[in-house]
Image 1 (tube, helix red, strand yellow):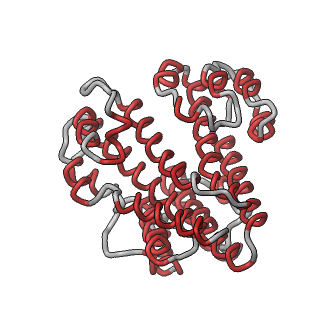
Image 2: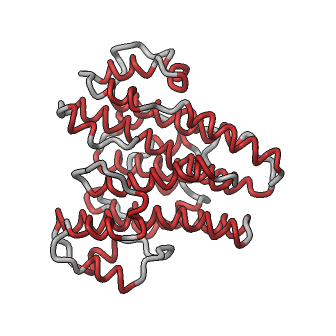
Length: 345
């Protein structure tokens, strides 16, 4: 990649990140009492006001606001892709693949639940020109047959077709979600291999492998803690293909009698350097905090555009999830402190 393009990506990423929501923004939003108040506050923030300017204050429901937030976060990645004119362009479009998977899963959930109106109300029109499938056709799917038909000739058809069930109650959503996750990482690591040589390739692989490993640890914790799952069930739920954790270490984690001991493993692992003194009640937030601190380090200190881009995407996903947690917390009338403890910043 040319130095001008690389510098442009790094500069733009850091500029957008510099305008991220800060501690004072989150502190204020957790004190609000309704989704409408969150909407009104976001209308005052630089990167959200344009997308919210045409909404009728007080009448935006949770699903619509969350879709607008997704649109804003996705638009950030497009601003960086705008600078790419080099052969590694495909790497910088990974976020589009992830967005496609999110939409496919959203439609699948609507098919299973029968809540088609909610799906249509939150129609992601901004993504229509970027999708590799017919978005209009996909979002009106009401059966698994419709879903498969709308995804013909795409990478997603081959993943979904083996899980076909005519009866919606038989659809194996969790297994499909995992298979799509594996597909995503197959695309990630293939594009890294196609576009970068050893030094850059290894650093990028570490970023994504770390994300996979932390997500695996969260899955192990949740399956042991809440579902008392056995070893085989746990192993079937994990993405092992790109993980750097040895089979021996993985078996040690799975065999722990008390799921809470997994937190102690994290505190003693190589990831501990990305932890801080803030305490969390959920293992998900230990993992997210580590991803956040690692990504922030790349954002501040790396001069390599692909690394900065990868870190930027993770940091923007965390901002999105922070907002979703605030919206859900307000919706279910959680205490301010409980909502605050779910936020990563």
